[in-house]
Length: 559
Image (tube, rainbow, N blue to C red; front, side, top):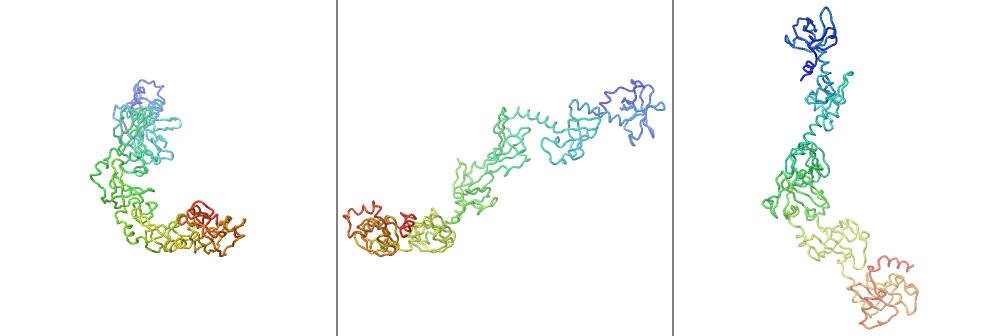
């Protein structure tokens, strides 16, 4: 009911109001007629009232006999003067005051935007703060202009003419009612249309009508989803199905992929092992690339299946998201819902031709591409590298750090030792470019024979002597003189040539024992093995046994 109608119900008829009480009173007057200056009303008891025609404009909104609220303001020349507009305005304010007290909603029209919110016409201008426009935070108020809705009067100051209204409170009441209806009706398997309200790393919260449910990232799509933002945005509307519902805890689990066709159903009817298909790269990980063969159906190209020859540490080196690629199906596991794919197997394995081109024993030259603690990687041809292990660098030297002897980019000659096509590995050697000097020394260093050697270095426990180039034997301090000595330097010096008796020879361990004080072996040949296997003092090595410690000891002995 309008403010005017409500006022007519509450005010007394003018015919029942005493003349003394008419001043500043709103009464129900009956419209009589109009002339050029005035509208004439009948107040009853032969009392007349006049209202200036300017209040109404060209057209008169009343017919004779219509009852109209009238504010009686003064009495002049036996006629009362009054105002219909003032009566209407007062009626609206009195009506709004009662609305504020009762808490009833009021209809209104949003008419304008201002600094703090919006202006609403509810018969008079009211202020709608930004925080009370909607249930959620509003950044752009302009989208609400021209909207008609119900509002609740939350502040009313008649003296100052200030009225503040809220739309949010009305929406909260509606939401509360709808939520309760939903709580009573919700059940597993029901479908709803929801709105995405918030997105996290593990899923999205979807409002299905006053209740927020969690749509976990694993239930968004049949395909791989690394982050919910890949498929959803805040504000998106989507259809979901109830997967779990706990009415006590008000916890709601939702699903989206369950409403979509499962691409894994009948997958082996559409695809088979060895088939070449086209797909789109949807995600990159350290271990490989996920390729979608169709919506929701993805396979993995492991990083090792990207190239036959390139050392690819991350698929991003050769692929990018949304790229269309051809792949070969290696395997389909319907139980685990996994498809293994390959890109490199679309081409012939170049290692097959490499094995044919470089048989065992082939010599070739190539640049050093990489140096590690365990050896050198040498490029045989573009994309094909072989390893020279540290043990294959030298026959006679123990090389612990290859970077001290070689540089990246350096051209070196190597020998092919082995090629494993399946493992895509090529074993190379540098020391094999020359004959093993131990083959030569075996003919020279015969146990029981005397040979000429050159002292190369001194250590606390003896002296090393070169037998042939690169091969040394050990003269233990106890085998230097018949007399007891304190230091090897008392008997020999580096560079000195001496004649020594070969005490032992162990090619497997690469050790040779020598003696300066003996003319023949001290025991039968059957016992020679005791020198080579057990007596550390009589054994010789190329540095692999003593290492840097021997070198330092030698330097100290020389001093």
